[in-house]
Length: 318
Image (cartoon, rainbow, N blue to C red; front, top):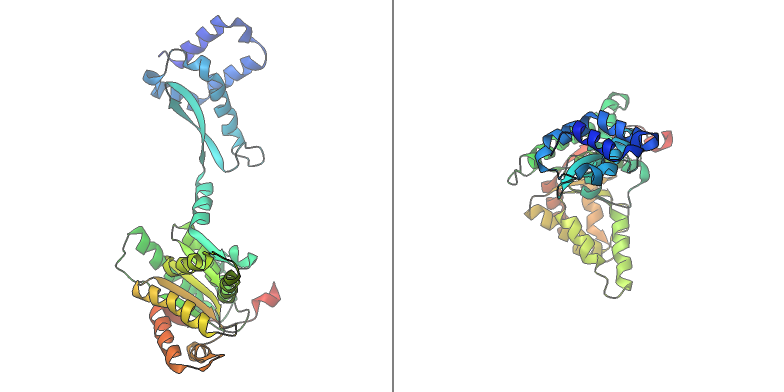
């Protein structure tokens, strides 16, 4: 195949009517585009004789959309930029996700949140870390969360399936930022390619209960399996519901047993410290069952390290 300059010259000679107007302007844009020039030179041996005539509009689209892609408001496909490929000997324009778009798509794929507040879904671990000194009582929790993030990213980057990374059990008063911090961790991990599931404990139980009334509903098994098998699971707001024996023995116990046996990172947030959590787990409508609570606490303590979170109520400041 001839070089681009020769091809353009012959095209103008064959079609003299293109020497004026919008088509002439399009030809000049194609001719002067460095990426088109490089593409043509690099693939000259693969192109058919009539490649320019057939694919001229693809080349023009590439030049135009490449400029528009820099501005999301004018881009044909926001978050994507055009690239030139060859299909059966002809130039063809296609679109590839930008690095930012790829990260957003990956995060959407890697992150599942169930009944998590909107502000938590947008939490940023970098911002929290930068502002750590402004919120006394949270330094230990933020530092522990950053260490956990680093350890998990390192584990999955190195494909180290043999190393167990314990999660965190964040406990403290209402509104001190426990859920927000775990949401930031979930966002940071999913953006780094680590699959995370974050669920509001009480809402998940209510969602599972509602499935009982629907025939052939497989959502119980599906949601339960997702919680059991997630690379990282965050159970938020433990202890705010009136615990039933079913929720404790058929849901929580099953999830924690699986995750302990498979050494999967698990995090919790709660208003209860570990001692109070054990009291909560022991008491159901059927009475007090200390033995079952003690067994569950062994799983919690195996899976997560307790870290206290203190400070002012951030919800009242937003």
